Length: 296
Ligand SMILES: Nc1ncnc2c1ncn2[C@@H]1O[C@H](COP(=O)(O)OP(=O)(O)O)[C@@H](O)[C@H]1O
Ligand SMILES: [Mg+2]
Image (tube, rainbow, N blue to C red):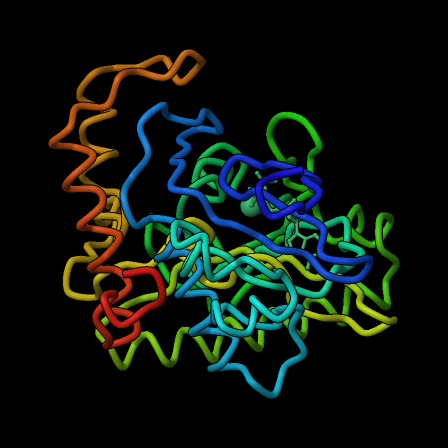
């Protein structure tokens, strides 16, 4: 129980989930920052608001696609969670969602070769064990966006799997539906971002079922779940600057941290520049200042 009498269900690396009745959830995005699945001690101011605001932006952009999101508006949440208006630190970072039965896959879509997929490609010439053309370099675009699901690990790192293994988990028919839905969302988002000078390299969706309907859950196309690059800074074969946490990444690399707990102490100036970077990601993607969003 917390001050609002909500029953705490779960805390992930970033979000705290509370039950709202039997069928709804309050998902509160914290300012926690994780790197290599290790959570830093220092919060990044505004990060949780940016994640929630961007999810809200994309859900509205895809308003023809069923989603679990009910509202991020504190005045609406107050109707479901009496007293919510009296907790300003949650305004803008909380979203009320319908409680879903989650599909046991991380629904990753990749338009460009990067990240773990690039590491695998260098070793084996495949991406999630699937055949792709030879001679690709980091940042190269696939002829068609690839659906490359991974397992949803309860503990530790998610595992990359191929489509046969994914079909073993959710069934062929469901896999096809998830793939079609996620690739369609990906191409719509990539188109929208390209109009703003941004490239969507890859992203991860989470799907679930509400009353038997397949819906988009969790965060949607945020900097935490996506690689978004400034188009004018992409150089074939080089890692482009990450839109959200490049100052943080550069600093992490400079200290040669071994990527295992405990996390290093993040200096105040790195916290400040990373916070500004998240804020500018929101503004660049949506065209609106973050100060327009709830909880400013
Ligand atoms: N509508 C929903 N119904 C039920 N669970 C959800 C819904 N949306 C998201 N989730 C789950 O809530 C959790 C979000 O917390 P987060 O901190 O992102 O966790 P993680 O560290 O596991 O990514 C995830 O486990 C996600 O699968
Ligand atoms: Mg998550």
